[in-house]
Length: 603
Image 1 (spheres, rainbow, N blue to C red):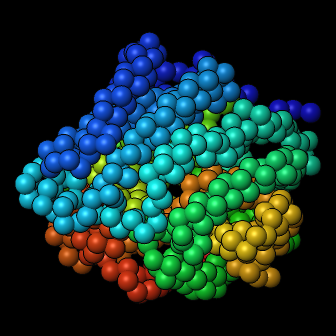
Image 2 (cartoon, rainbow, N blue to C red):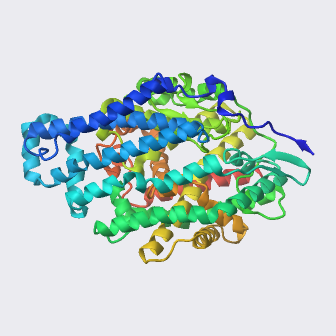
Image 3 (tube, rainbow, N blue to C red):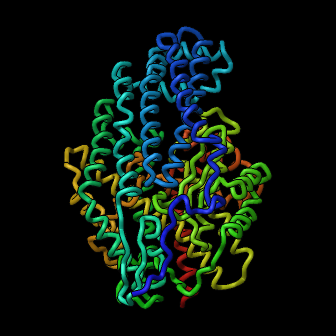
């Protein structure tokens, strides 16, 4: 028996240039420890306003400003611990520090809950008068408006403080999920029918999912789902706790359902939510079934299984690409965004904002974390393949967005609704795809790029929409009092997959376990928002072609606006109207056109 892959490195064995530079956050762990102590002192400086928040315009401004300063410190402290934990979740010290930060953040939420309550005790006219008297309060206009909009669902000050005090407990389901999959879950290795042995981890499984070797792909899937199955009851109990938490809180706050409460946080209507889920599933399913049939035919598969959905259509063409090569190509593709944006992108690529190592204990997937007043940090696992360049472009989109928002807005105004958050990231992916297509006449390279573009739509319009569909079902059942168990989750996930793929894809029992793979279920109604962002970026990218620089300028203005507008207003600023299903239908039609071109290339 032979081993065909190198063993995964420990974090200490990884070359430093492949890791992010956390010294930009804190020079040493001792400096971080000092900041953690300082944060506790800053919390006390804010609590001195308790009982006085609304006594004058000046006092209100000072309280809000100091609150922002505390949040900025808290974000830096939290980000440092989070990034250390994400880089190596198996390190006991990282686990302990993450827990320590969780306790302090829970204290912060509890000790500052009075600010919101005391603002709500004021009437709107008083606040309006304060803003006229103290012009600097206009910087908090959106914050104040949002607080007053929440008034019908706000509890008494004492109740709000009690809920805030349980913040660490409320975050436990997500923490347990992350801790388990990075520190406890072990997959070992799997052996193919050809006798080749491969090590398997959470991070390496996506590589096997995309393997051109059907034996490797299906063997990895079998081993991966077998391990997931051993943990399903624990993970179901963890997720059920998360859902129950939302259901209980929604009832306490007088919402009709947990879904209504979670959408209210996003400033998204139930119609917008259901339209996104329903329109994409209805319109996209026929196109994706064609895609599945094409894969089965071209790859000569005996059957199309769930394990084969990410198999490469051109298995002999996998362009290698180093991180350095990818960085330069991505930078070239984004030049249209202008010098200010490009300055951020160059620093992101060259100044160790990116952790691209593969090591034991590292969190799977990719993300961008953007601590206010520092710079964004990107996590990715680099496999020396061109496909990684698309992920890099995506995460740099988040980095550019929050770097600009942080530059032009105070911390309380930086984050827009999740409904918009994935638009800047997917815009970068689209610009990257178009740039590569414009540079090559090679038929296979063009096919590869089209397939990568389809991968983006698959990720956002299929994977995340079907996650969103499961959430919609789970919260509906939970609101009715139905117990959320592993059996129910597997049944509902499998049913959602079968409804979308029909008879064109074999959905086995292992497919029903995919709810265990993503942390998004612990982040409110996050999954469906990926599709909203991609819908907006698709529409805006078309405007780039039609209108040129004015459309680009509007897009940059939307990024700089941060969280100063509601999601529909931000998208309208960028020239996209999401009040109808027209942008969704256009985006889905674009997917259909990509599949049309693929079918022709393989005819």
